[in-house]
Amino acid sequence: MSKPRFQLRSSIGKKLLNGLTGVLLLLFIVAHLAGNLTIFVGKDALNGYAAATHSLGALLIVIELGLAGLFLAHAVSAISVWRDNRAARDTRYVVSKSKGAQSKQTLASRTMIVTGLVLLAFLILHLWQFRFGPDHRTALPGHAGDVWDLHRIVVDTFKDPIWTGLYVAVMVLLGFHLRHGFWSAFQSIGALNPKLRPLAFSAGLIFAIVIAVGFLVLPIFVYLAPDPNAGVVGLVKP
Image (cartoon, rainbow, N blue to C red; front, side, top):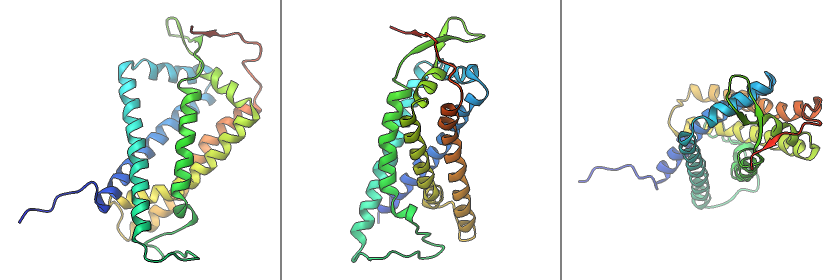
C-alpha cells in the first residue's frame, strides 16, 4: 500500500496553506505598522525608514516578489476553501447562528471573502500611491545625496479629506477582517487546542483593534496637523 501523501489541493492542504500564509501576513502587517509609526518620531525618521528599505537594492525586489506571492497564495487558497465549503453544504440556512466555541461563527467570519477582496483591491491602490507614486527627493542627515521623500508623499495624500476618509474606512474594514482572520489562521495550522481557542479568539479581537487603530491614526494625524509641505518645492527624479 502506498503511504498517504500530503495533497496541497485537498481540503486540509488548502486550509493549511491559507493558515500559514495568514500567519506570515500577520507578521508583515505588524512590521509594516511599526515602520509607518516612525512618522510620529519625525520626518527624518520616516524617510530614514524608507531609505533603509531602498538600500536593500535587489534584495528588496526579491522581498516584494515574495510578499506578492504570499498575498496571492493567501487569496487563492481562501477563495478555494470558501468554494469548497459552499459546495459541501446540502442546504443553506436563512439565518446563520454561532455553533459555539468550535466554529466561532460571526459576521466577520461570514464576510471574510468580501472583506478580503476589498482589501486586496485596496492593496493595489496603496502600492500605486506609495510604492510607485511620485519620486520626490529630499536631504537626510547622515546620508550622502538625496533620498526618497516618503514623508512628503504621505502628507500630500492625507491632506486630501477624500483619501483620508477612504483610508480610515479601509482600516476599519481591515480590523473587521483580522477579527476572524487572526483566530482562523492559527486554527488552520493546528496551533490551537480546545483550551487555547477561547484565549486565541479574545486575542484576535485585541489584535484587530490595535492594528486597525494603529493604521488609521496616521491619516487622521496627518490630516489634522499643520501642513509641513506648504510652499515646499521638492526635487522630483526625472
